[in-house]
Amino acid sequence: MFIDSHCHLDFDCFSDHIEALLKQLNQANITKLIIPATQENRWTKLEQLCTHYSPLYYALGIHPHFLASFQEQDLTILAAKLSTRSKKCIALGEIGLDKFAAADDALQESVFLKQLVIAQQLQLPIILHCVKKQGRILTLLKQQKFMHGGVYHAFSGSIEVAHEFIKLGFKLGIGGVITYPNSTKTRETVAQLPIESLILETDAPDMPLYQQQSTTNTPLNIITIFNVLSELRQEPKSQLATQLYTNVCNIFPLSND
Image (cartoon, rainbow, N blue to C red; front, side, top):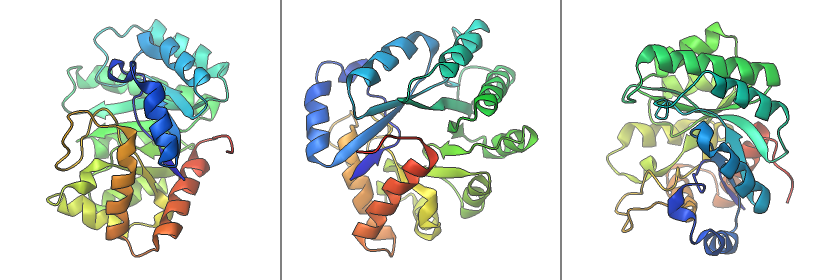
C-alpha cells in the first residue's frame, strides 16, 4: 500500500473527476492521501471534501505564497478550527518560508512563527514549505524549541541539511524531483539517508515528473516516484514500500485500513 503524503486534491482542476481518480488510486493500491491547506478561504471546502471521501486526510495552515489577503484574524480562526478538529485533520500546514514568495520576509516569518506556536500548543506536527530558506527555518525551529516534528515537504538538498531536519523530528517528503536525472545532489542524498526518514509525495497538481506528458501531476505518480526511489536504494521493494507507509503513520495519526 502507498500514501501520497502531500497533494492538493481540493484544487479546482480535480473537482470534475475526483471520484474517478480516487477509484484509480484505489486500484493502484494508493490508499490514503494527505491534503495540506494553503489559505483560509479554502479551509471549509477542504474539510468537507475530506469528510466525504474516506481516503482523504488534511492539514490546516497558511502557505507563504498565499499571504496577499492575510488578516490576523485568520490565525484566530486557525487555532479555533484546530482545537476542535476532526480525526481527519492530522497536522498544521502547509507553512514555512519561501525566497520567491511575493510577501516580504517579515510577514512570512511572523505568520510562520505564530503558526508554530499554535502547533506547539496543540501538539501537532507541521507540514513545512521551505524554498531557499533552510538555514533560517532551522534557526527558528530551534529558537522556538519546536518539539512535534512533521514533514519537510519537497525535500531537495544536501545530506547535511537533511540530517539537521531529521534531528528535529522531521521526515523528508520525496517527490518528482528525484525522477530528473540532473537532480544529482538530491538523488545521491536520498540514496544515503536512513530509510526511516523518507516518505513519498506528489504535490499534485504541481511538480510534474521528468518527461511527463500531461501538464497536470496526479497522485497516481506516487508509483513512478516509488520505482525511481527503489532504483536509488538498496532495500528490496517490498521492504521499502512497507517502511515508507509506516513512516507516514509514525508522523501523522492516520486511521487503520
